[in-house]
Image (cartoon, rainbow, N blue to C red; front, side, top):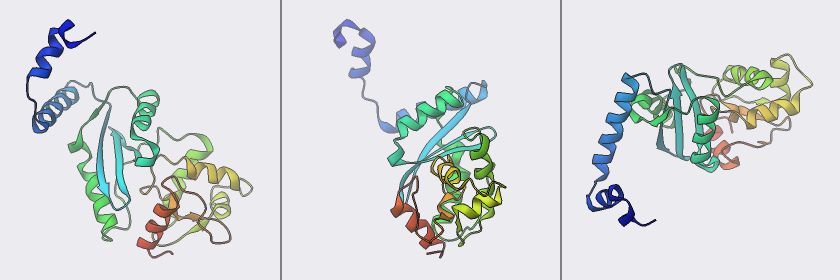
Length: 204
């Protein structure tokens, strides 16, 4: 089918639409959807020293932080399937999250004062994720130490899997978990990102 088969497509291509106007339309759509109770997940992207990050939040709190290497479209598809398909790009709803992350990367913030929605964590992994913030800024813990912390000292490999699938990296600091020999181990954002975060915190 070409545009001549569909008058609506012809009209859209004939009308010049600027980015600012599209942003305004999206903002109005999101505002109306929120007002009508039709918006369950808001998302935006921000630029950081580690590259773009995708942030997503529900009414309960921040539900996802994703690195670009995770492919944002796939991340949004997963959120739509596991949290809600009623998801819209709504930057203003995540202004506070963006501000706290800016402060963290500037070295002015050591803890986050954000409500978190752990909907994307379950079972043992959720237990690990909820305990990771007890590893203080500028400190590290081994996978074995985290396993002991959650009362499963032999579940070292499962702790590694939990860290690798952490839906809230940086805010839930899985980057502070290292191997027992002090080497970094893996990281959802890549080893370079993990090194940058630990260097920022003075832990490496």
